[in-house]
Image (cartoon, rainbow, N blue to C red; front, side):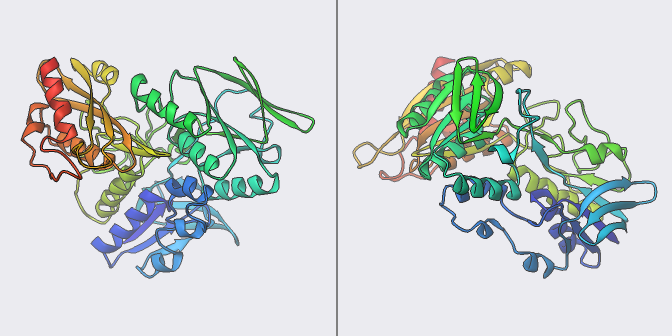
Length: 451
């Protein structure tokens, strides 16, 4: 059986590896549009900060290690057309165009950065100091530009995960940073306003200028001066970084007859099958089954892409495994703080038909009589009528095990626990690391009292 994988990032490599494991007699070929198969795009900010000095260390596996598993890796192969009827695809390659045949196809083309409707972005580019950031090539070009221009000031448009991570990375590098966000708080799709204010304070404490509720209208270069024009004024910059989110990269799939939704995400079932026979899709290019929602959602996450890719690879070689779904668990470090969230926020839960109640709690990460105790701010959302757990947001210090605690909430959500059942969980305790009632359980007690 000939398996072709289009894309070599999280979903693509997971599909290829699982196909080789599940059906070792199959021929598995992975087509990668660039020269960076199985690189950690999530690690780019930590390379640019200097925390990971060598960009090569962002590779989960080298090309040689991938090929040693029996996968035929074709780097710098950009697929230009897929013909499902003849089971062929064409691609541009270093030596010219190629045509390949397949029995089964997995599409893992990922996402591409959004270009917001800002004047000048269609005219300005790398030569002007204006950067997008989504690929290893883009990261390396930005790194080189920061050095060559002797950059002292960067304006970041967008205060989502990448914008905030890059604010930390560039500040750590000794560069002055301004973050501009159209919505009224940082991490606007992750945190409620009250918790987001904690992150704004952390950014400002480290010298980052943060302006939310401001709309950028133009990026322009007048002579030798690059500037960003917003409704609250103009700011000069040596480099402008646009990180306003992503959109599924599905033009190729849609042109071949693969069904996409109104937002351009590929429609797949729980086995990652598309509407076309013998064609699967996974990762940031597809819509995702969400355990708390009746309709699939678009939630591009690396962890999700790995899981979906594994399922697509298994099923493309004869399996019948189903994707269990996500609850949207995310975590990010912001200097000395950690932000984490899972499940639905209050307004999302209401839109989905729940009757949400959200309660704020602040609890110490471990017993206060042990040195170093720090507060964890928790926003817990449950259904007022059923008592079901719906979501949680946490903000705390880097050493307060925020990721561990959000994972506990995530497991509870995926297994349908109520808020009250959180009190039954047998969680680890010792005074330097926790409390007899963990912070996540104290938040549950407060929610029950408020209900």
